[in-house]
Amino acid sequence: MNKEQPVFIKGFKVILRPINPETDLENCLRWINNPEIRRLIKSGRFPMTINNEKEWLENCSKKKMESISLAIERIEGGIYIGNTGFHKIDWISRTAVSGTIIGDSENQNQGYGTDSKMQLLNYAFNTLNLRKIFSSAFGFNQLSLKHNQNCGYKEEGRLKEKFFVEGRYYDEIILGVTRDDWFPIWEKYQSLRNGRVK
Image: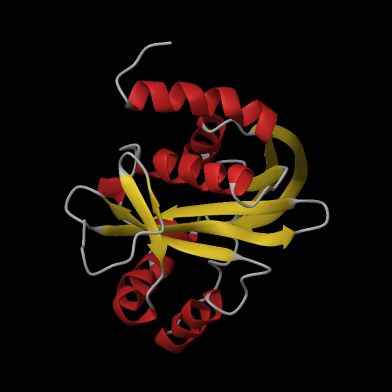
């Protein structure tokens, strides 16, 4: 773990920390312009310049009532590998929308995204007292769907042919998870990670 970076949440495989515009900008810019990442996110239609990305990073710290963005760092080696967080936080209805990007393919399918999402949900439900968290994915994005389902999200609906990606229209799949549905998964997840069997 990089001792110079503050730790906001410590998981089993990752830490979640505040995004640092000075040190994280280069990676964020590379990830958001990577064709393999761009095709999976709604904001990936146009090139992102360094000024665009810098403005986004700086805005992360200004919208705490609307969104919370955190960097994902591997505990092993202290390597910055992605971002996660909430947006569209509704403090009256106690809901939010979650999103996660793991920036490089070598860090995907290694459990880092699942650990970051499980820690984020723990923070949402047990610290922020949110009631339900939503997410969405393009219909072809099986990795994102599996990642969310592993964390307790269930499909709640589809917006038919909403997005145009690489010459075709795809459904947007809407997923959601409540604290009650997530908590048994969280208990099992902690037990497995701590080497206990329930």
